[in-house]
Image 1 (cartoon, each protein chain N blue to C red):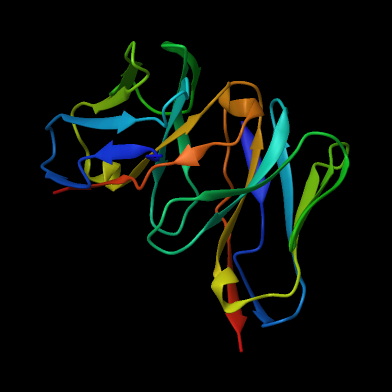
Image 2 (spheres, rainbow over the protein chains, first blue to last red; image 1 turned 90 degrees about the vertical axis):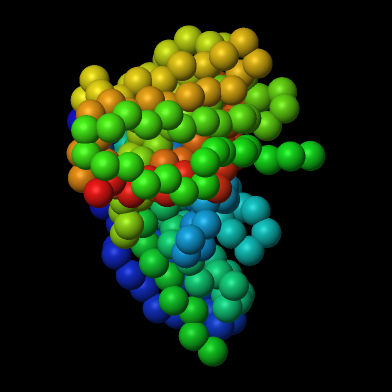
Length: 108
Length: 114
């Protein structure tokens, strides 16, 4: 089975930095994805971590600690268009798990 | 380049009926995965197909089945529909095995069961 925990909702100000945490327990583990999903749209890929450490990709960074079952997504220089749900998705080789998502509200 | 396409966009069925949802992956992608997403929740994994073989299955009843065709398109079939099957069904494709590559999602099929 699997258990994925991330905050339900967060609010941040335009231009600020926000960190979305995710803890997970899965029967197997191959890596962890983060996806962004705007309301009424399909998820889009943000990042993929396999090894421990930080992966940076423009304004977005993602961190993984396999031993702690922990990941976070860091969003810098927030823009209004970043208002969306952010899905933590740990994977094992043949099965894919998504958290319920964190709804991020960016306010002016 | 065309992205992942799904048909139909919307569908209304009644309890007990059968439904077939279709997905065409991005050209060159060999892996297709199916997900069910209920409003306010994250996608729930149903199946993964890679090179036309089932490679993974989530915790869904046997009423759910799928297949992948030689051209890598895929169908998801659901029998004996229940009200609880109402959801957005997402298809995602990836170039290689989905667990090691980025998945590209289609726009989804919105299924309503009355």
